[in-house]
Image (cartoon, rainbow, N blue to C red):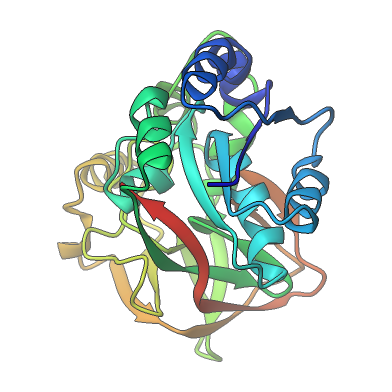
Amino acid sequence: MNVRVLYNPASGRGLGARAIPKIRAEFARCGFTDVRSTTHQGDEARLVAAAIADGVETIVVAGGDGTWSNCAIPLAKAGSPARMALLAAGTGNDFAKNLGIDPRDPRALAERLADGGIRERRVDMGRVDDTWFLNCAGFGFDVAVLQASLKWKRLKGPAVYVVSALQGILGYPGLGVSVDGTTPRSHLLVVFSNGRHFGGSFHIAPGARIDDGLLDAILIRDVANLARLPLLAKAIVGKHLASPHVDHRPTARMSLTFDEAPWFEADGELRRAARSTVEVSSVPGALRVVDL
């Protein structure tokens, strides 16, 4: 099998660089020695394009949600028959949870690829206007949490997002949103999730599936400051959907209108929309992934 390993040494605040010696050793033991690293932010697209051009059948991506997304997007956009396999070396690793796989063991993946005992599946992706995402996109408090998380240099893993969320929950001003032309209302958070998990610890869409052709829209309306923390705690364990302040809609497409062009996050990367109205849509069956 034609296999190439791509990794981002900066993923997971350095976890990618620390993980690669073991990954190299385990894959070399199975005869796979083609391992390539990103050299700068956004370099994944170049590496994926080269792998497609070289006819690579399986692209193994070592990183976290950001690295996986940065590889999945150009792979899906190219319509390539290559499939993507995941190795975890990131902060949240939500997409692997949504697949229902444990991507932490490079030996198991290398051996499975070597003996041909793998399964694959097609999974959906999403779009905010022209920005594609693999796992989730969020508006509102989600953006504030991501911005705050960048200040926590010493924290690792999902704790980064939890601490950032707890720190900012009381001071967030809310975000006015009109959904599909309805009367604008103040929201705490609007998330479009391809799978169940989000932000490392949040069970944001308990019933979501990554292969149903839909995104799960979770719209959490703003509440009084003292009611925000219990609502956030419920979102961590997936019990928030029963709240009268939460609107859950599986959707193929939704239009959102804001007072101005909004900031949003897509798979942990901050983006700014070009207009005050954005279209969020599902891209069904966009990506082939290895499902161990």
